[in-house]
Amino acid sequence: MDVPYDLTSYVRVLKMATTPTREEFMQVSKIAGAGILLVGFIGFLIGVIMMILTGGGF
Image 1 (cartoon, one colour):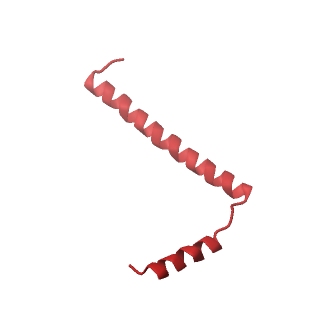
Image 2: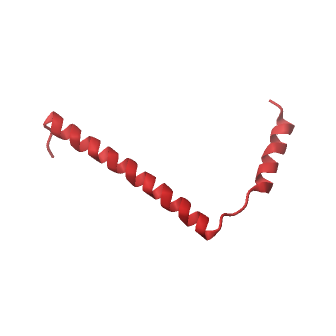
Image 3: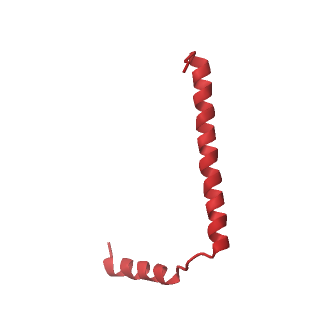
């Protein structure tokens, strides 16, 4: 592991990084939120299907 080279790479990335604009942040937030909702909905459907198949109740 070449520590000086790694540190130089990390510093270069940090210098290139910029704060996102409000529009960029909102777009990323919407996409991430939609992904979370989609995964949750799929999990819910799997739970309901398993409950129906196994005859489980509340």
